[in-house]
Length: 495
Image (cartoon, rainbow, N blue to C red):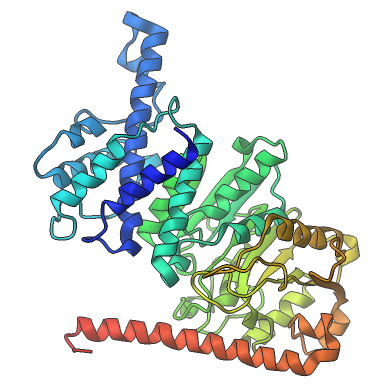
């Protein structure tokens, strides 16, 4: 089976749900079934290998060493597909028992879909979904790990397209992930963490990056935390289907209940990377005045905007010598006033911020506002001590119908500009400048890129700031209106 054939087959499986299931919810149903099929097919493949190796001398104890996961009797794919009536109840029972039999590896991995609820998922739709997967063999002899991982990424991208703005909750465009990981340059043996890991794309990309440089990705130690149950389950499946086994993905609120810990304190990592939810309201500021995890490096952020809570959590989570942070943020973090301005000044004075990289507009499903990458290091290179590198890469993109994208050439040029401090394309595609803290202080610790790269158009910069702030406010208002509408509906009001 070719990559394209595999992807088209998987997309056909998703389309089997069209009608009774909203396309934005396809992922909650398709991924658990796909993962179940992969586990079951791989189990029989491992069983055949054990038989070939030991023949009649094979015992249950010997065979157990061959299996990645335990599948209890009556819980294989064949047991479910051959159940003609109440298939959802049979599937639900099988998935629950598999999770219970593999508590350390598979706890919560299948999400919380109510498979037996035929009002939500009619028998006919479930049968069509299962039959679509039944024709595909997902064992290692039929589909290698790279193909399977790529197919999973394909489905994530397709589901993101179908989800519209909701996609921002679980999916970061791969070209943005690729650029951020390339800049952070993960090495074999590094510990990696994503405190808002979504579907695990950042963690998967670090593995790809190490592979491409000839390193052994099995030496990486990957960690993620995600608040959404379905999304955290998708992340676990994503990592397994990419051939990874030694990782830790936990579900929970990173601000109120951080779970990537070392004893009573935060675990420290070489690389902390994230595309967290922008301008998160009610993020948990009430608990930060006396934060037990040492995350108030420079102050408590506003209760209605958690951007600098993410930044401080991430900076507090890196090692003193090798630690580096890469985070996607809205441009508002560069110039907003009040508490955020004080935190921003403090981080700069502590010599933690290494680079501000402005990206093109309209790269994300969840927002059309321009975003930036912020790079922090505990130990900056000598030539960048008490300085910040500003890069304007807003022109480096390929225009798309719904979203813009960055090509491989764009990514390489931006990465080289960051690492070498030089514009290698020489065609005006980007601009950059290394700026001393004294000059930043003269500008009131405002980090708007246009103040340092195009100082002669400062008036235009001020207009741009106002437009960004206006757009951010509009998006926050729209999100608040959606929440209000949901609460009114739940209370019985007709809208």
